[in-house]
Amino acid sequence: MDKSPYSQENLRQFDTLVAIIAKLRAPDGCPWDKEQTHQSLRENLLSESYEVLEALDKGARDTLCEELGDLLLQIVLHAQIAKDDGEFAIGDVIKSINEKLIHRHPHIFGTHQVKDSAEVMHNWEELKKEEREEGTSILQGVPKEMPALAYACEISRRAVRVGFEWENLEGVLDKLAEEVREIKDTASPEEKEQEYGDLLFTLVNVARWEGIDAEAALRSANQKFFKRFVHMEELCQKRGIDFSKLSFKEKDDLWEEAKKGVKETK
Image 1: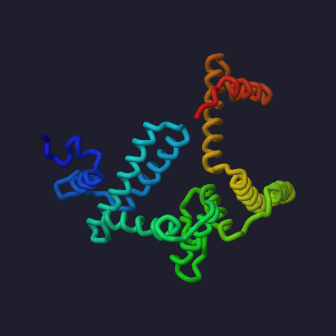
Image 2 (image 1 turned 30 degrees about the vertical axis):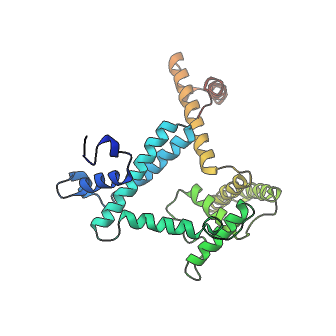
Image 3 (image 1 turned 180 degrees about the vertical axis):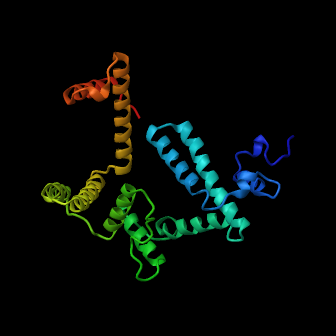
């Protein structure tokens, strides 16, 4: 029997992944892995997170499994770098999240009773408030480096948890119409930019009221536009047409043709 820690029978073990990363970072390990720092891996972490999102959007379960592994690699690698620097180890990471989950679920691990998920979220925010330093804003923990749309979604959700919310969807839609009017009424580019930002933020709130993931919705719209535009380019190439020289009406007709020709799938 193969007693190697990297044998097939051990490849499902989390400790095996930790051991592999430690070996890659060892003095006689991989030159590339040994050179990495928290800062050098920032883009890798972000990229792997987006690849997980793409797999989720496509409903590609096999790909999702692989991409989650790639993301987990980044987490373990960061933990190993921290261990090498004498900061913390992967066990501390796991201990931290376990403590947090137990503390924030007293209705599961304690005697507290809840009636629905809304109450769970309310209690979650109250428990998080206890963990924050006094005087710290509820919005303080949202990373400002998040993409602007995702950041808007998160700070909007957090504000709602403490009751800062419209009474109904109609109120949000009225605000949306108001923001559109304000864009029309402003003159300077600076004012238009500000009003456009307000419009986008209000759209985020409309999406939240409708139960729509604004980030996922925009990714889907981007992909839809990409497919249709590429299809138009392909049609022009087949027909020997210079797309840039078509009239607006001809381009619009071609767009309608592309809408019918591109199968709408994730």
